[in-house]
Image (tube, rainbow, N blue to C red; front, side, top):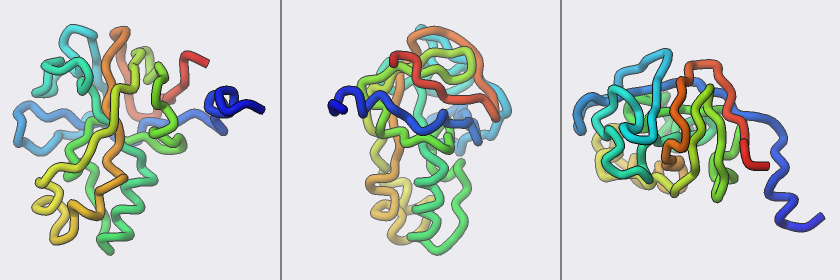
Length: 158
């Protein structure tokens, strides 16, 4: 099988585990059960409001949070990581160059979401280094829609 074909094979879909919105830049995200997105405004209720289309929504894998928890030797609250969506069951890095569906919304992978210096404060000493390689991804909104906890993340351009 060619590499191009292998990159389109996923063992299963992902699942939304947590959603957080930040009204102001330095606020901690508030956990919500449901969120709406539009290409013009990004994630409704989030401070980013589509300023940079390439970073309208940030996603992180639950499995990576578990890895960081192990490295830090403590449980990690997703709100401390400053990402919008926690997804389980799917390698988010495998979404590079893809478009995917989250609930009824369509998003496109735009890049990696590297940790910021706030991880040292939020997680404690070594938090920044624990997060390196585990920061998740950024996405832009292609088609407006709604997603909620329990919804699937489905690859839409296979």
